Length: 189
Figure 1 (tube, rainbow, N blue to C red):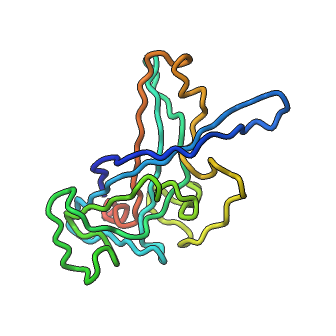
Figure 2 (cartoon, rainbow, N blue to C red):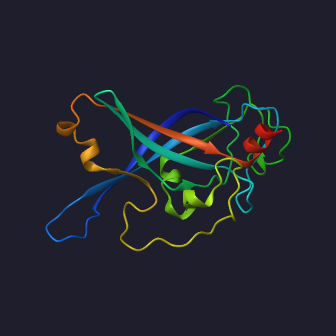
């Protein structure tokens, strides 16, 4: 599985995460859209109601004064439907009777919108996923989010890390990384 590109950003606003009276620490939340490609020669399993689907790590980095730092990360959105597009080449999905129903065919792409990747209902903690094997304990549903939580589970970044006056000349980078049990199994064989 490879990322062909990022396809947009959604901003969800900011919250003060410091409960200390008179103290403030504002954090903003974002999500990233992405296009993933099956660059292999086998179908990638993409079945939401089982453990056979990918999760997507979203991260943000800053390069400032020669120092490259990770300044934000999200929980892991779960993929639940492969769209079988042609963004990576010619998609000839001959193994599936319904596009995207059971997998992402070789040469096919799938688009995950930023709104979908920011939907907290489809996210789980990173700690539940073994990044080496792609294994996670079970399919959704996951626990519910507290009411009024704008930034929960999404790509969170401290506002000071983004403030231009505090980071003069900084460059920012975002990434989406797909983690799938199929890729991990192929790497170990």
